[in-house]
Length: 210
Image (tube, rainbow, N blue to C red):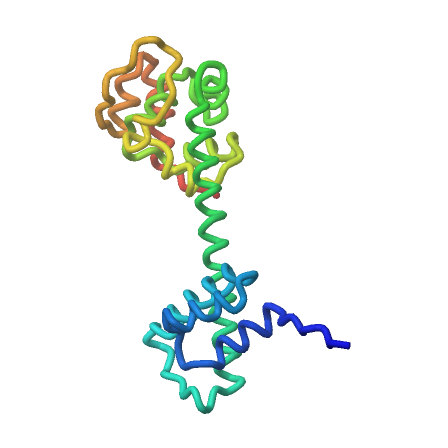
C-alpha cells in the first residue's frame, strides 16, 4: 500500500524558502510558487518583506551557510513590525476618511447644532471655520471634534480652504470659491455686537485643553 504524500504546511514551506538562499531571486520565487501554488500569495508577500529587510542598511549581510536562529528571529521581528505598521496606517487612513465624511455631512440642522456646541450664536461662523478660516482656534477644534466624536488631529486636516471643494451644498447654486481669511477678520465681519465679537476673539487666546 502506498504511503500518503505529506503535504507541507505554510510554515514548512516558508522555512524551506528562507533557508534555500541568502536573499530571494525572481527564479527562486517562481520555483516556490510553482511547487506550492496553494501558498502563492503567502510566498510572494514573504519574498517582498524579505527583500525589503535585506535592503535595509541596518541589516548586515547573512551568510547562507550559517543562517543562525538570531537571523531568523530578526527576520520574523521585521516582518511582524512591517505588518503592524501597515495595519496602523490603514486604520489611520480609515479614521481620516470617516472624519472627512462627518465634516461633509455638516449642513442644515447639523451645522446649527455644531455651531451651538462650540459656542457660536449662528451657523455663519461655523461655515467659515469649515471653508475659509486659516487659523481656527484650538478651542474650536477641540469642542467641534468632541461634538462630532472624531479625533481633533484628523478634524484639523479636514477643515479649511483645502477641504472646501469637497463639501456638499444643498443649494442649487454652487457657492463662489472661498477666499482665505483669519479668525480675527472672520469674527470682525460678523453682524453681531461688539461684546460678542470680543467674546469670540477671546477663543484665539485660550489654550487647548485637550
